[in-house]
Length: 199
Image 1 (cartoon, one colour):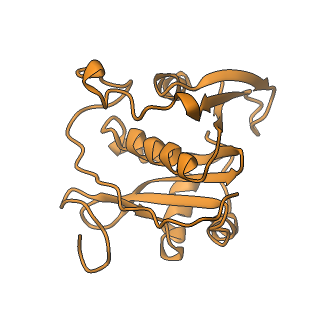
Image 2 (tube, one colour):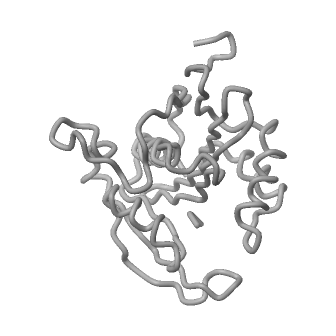
């Protein structure tokens, strides 16, 4: 751990998102979700509600933001607000680490279920979520601005035993679109007693 309280290696790390990250995150947001991008103010508003929100960024060795994710939790439901990885870093397990972190944070905040929305025309993301144990429970027709439907998926946390492949019984099972070798590490999340669209 360095003087700033971060853990990780020279290859990058995952840490709590701060106000200093918002401009870089919003720039990525506009590039990755041109039809449904959140404005900068929305990210600032989200970070202003730490009693119910948890946001993280993955950064590379030069501290450039390469992925981000956020969770809202109001007992007993947690909702994955967003999760995204820059295209050139997809397939390296970064999204898997971020999703694991969000689910663990939901449990820490005493949620019973984790919900998310995912585009019906995004089978790659759906495979990742199903690999984690999410199940489709509903469809929201024409949820996205371009008319695409959203699938509502749920993970029941009493069935969550950790990231897939983390135990010996699943050794050797790689998730969809993940490759071994990512060096990202997660920072400890600040512990509090307070509780509160993945695309």
